[in-house]
Image (cartoon, rainbow, N blue to C red; front, side, top):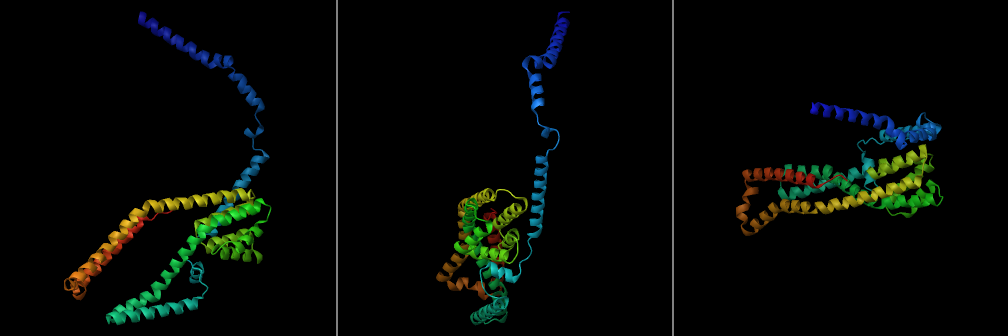
Length: 324
């Protein structure tokens, strides 16, 4: 039949075409010759590991071991009170801090007792002034000091990069930072130089810097120095890349703050509206709103409203704060 003949012819054509593509086309196009030339000029590195590959594998293993060791040493633990005082930039002892805390608690409790004439309110105020206020002050000073350190840290790394390119040793570059750069970078690197002078290696002294200033920037710096000291490499190039990364992180932080500024302003307005409205109502009709703090039911309502407002403020703060 014509259809069967046509199908047979098509199958035969496909078979001939496949045979020609597999066996004849490589000979005509030169692919076989190209494969032979590649096999002739291919180096033994593609078939068996050479000495260079062995060195690269050992280097990668050494870098991985260094990273694991640094991660084990830099495991974050709860900082002691002395460490928190040092991070805040204060030059006081633990005993002096306790004296200031006691004075703060007594003064705040006495002030609230004069204003309210209630013992339990004065006791709560004294407890907050003795335990909460001093530690909040420490955290505030430490965060402000860390922000200054982060702003100056990329420029300090650039000092090391330029010094290493000029032929100076790493220790001399650290001494330049410890004497020329502004605070708080100067005092922190002074401790690094003093630790290296006392017998520690530069990598160990930089690990102390990462412990004293617990931010990701100092951890990156410690890792770069540690790997370079143990595995070698181009220190100036590595630190130059680190400086660029830190500046890009700072730019990203500024963009996030700009994008979230509208949400933060809205949160501040919403949180302040109840107090503004209560103040205006008190100015116009004080007898109407004074029931809130004169009657027990009103005091309960104020307490519940304060708790709900605090929860809302914390939720909104969590929504507009981001990790960089």
